[in-house]
Length: 288
Length: 276
Image 1: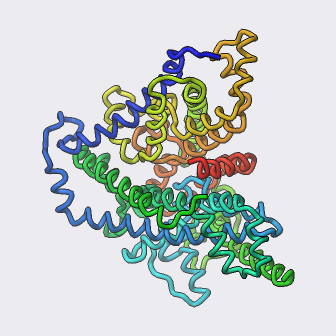
Image 2: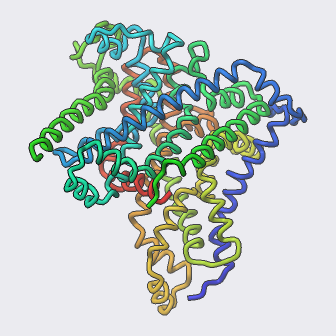
Image 3: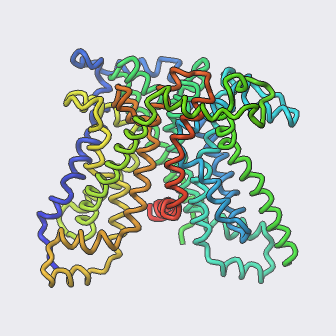
């Protein structure tokens, strides 16, 4: 059948408005506002590169960047290994398979705010059950939320609990896509488990792994709620992450120009990390 | 060989069993905390069985903050968002799947590319826009963007619509149905599963979201649950029994929804990974 072209534009109307006013327009606006001083009350003033200069010359910015990278690597690297192992354990034909899957996924659907409440309490330096459990196995735990050296580590543990199930589901889908015949053939040839893992599972899973790495790194970079609710960036800015830093500058200090410059930089960093990943994928991702 | 295999299975079963307890423990601890008295909270080592089951903590929580109001606000925001994306995504997906026109590839690419733009970056100009049109502290900034599209939903629905045979269009056309009617009578009913999936994603996302409501809303009686909980934390900083009551009550609806419809939710996640 032949359809009238104008109908297509009519149907796309709402989405086009959204793309312009809610997404791409704001991206352009963030770029432009980055060159101004703007506190919402008075009209914006042209500021040239001064926001960018003061960002780079502020030691706090570098601390924030390091905090975010530390968090991203911690949750990213450990999280990917952990979720892959979980997926492989569940993928074996065992009883209660579905129930295990549900249990590991459950923290994903809980709000980050509620999860942060739980962990803020469990990691409490003096009355928290986490340190008590460590004590029972002979470890004297640190003052998680009061010691700047440990706070981010605590938030990483919490985030792993919250997010591992999500990647596990994606890995499970990837594992299910590997044809069984490959394993049967390998078995006939007498291949052991390590050969099967390194010659079949990991290479054929690599597109999934690639997707998981990209998505989890981006999400990790965007960390906001945990650090806002559990510690609000403290103690001593040890958990001040990039998104929280933007939020504070924009909505606490109303330094909209400065916050926009930060946000634009943040966008460029995320884009670069993604591009590098895409550039590297040819070396290790196997597409059939 | 078979023996080695069954040992392997037993080991992975045991490992999973231990991990399952580890993963459930925070939920267990949250529940246990809700029924402890103020004094018992600060015992160390902590108690494993409450000396006195303080069920009244729940009532206290409901009275301490307008908890029902928060819940109703969450419900209004989440449900209207789901309806809003059904509207905008099905129209856009239909146009992209079934029409040919100049600029289609450009529009499609713009939608796909928009998925990697984080809300954390564009929320600042959005705030300024909503401020200038006096929408702050209303639900409009939380709902109208969904009426104007949701890229992931449009993308998934388009993929789904493409699998529907065109013969069905022609048959409906013969019966005198117009384009819009074909969308409503053929495409939407056939894609019920896809709608459930994106609806669930949206519902859970809105129910749990903190960033947008915390920025766009300021009056307490308009807050959805996550913002309400933060508000409560400001007031009851160390009363973790009440805070845990609030957290627990806030997650129960979404957990029940997930347990009922987890097939759609989990399949949806797998689908985004494979199709994306």
